[in-house]
Length: 98
Image (cartoon, rainbow, N blue to C red; front, side, top):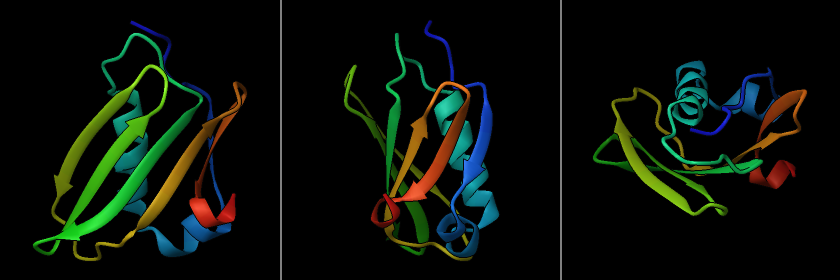
């Protein structure tokens, strides 16, 4: 099993202001719980709303990985989120903040 992202976690102002804290925690946990040989430095989350719940499509490019998750949420949102691993720290940001 590959080394997991295990460094300081940071969020941009956009994430802090627009993404519910519980959803932030879930995204970090989805990265930690990935069952892959290697984690890409870039994790991509596409958030959408399905039947009033938060739908999350979690992907990475190399090695290829894709998994869907559905969570109850009082405040589901839509958007694309990146988590970039820079070895000493990882940053969560909305795609439009890149």
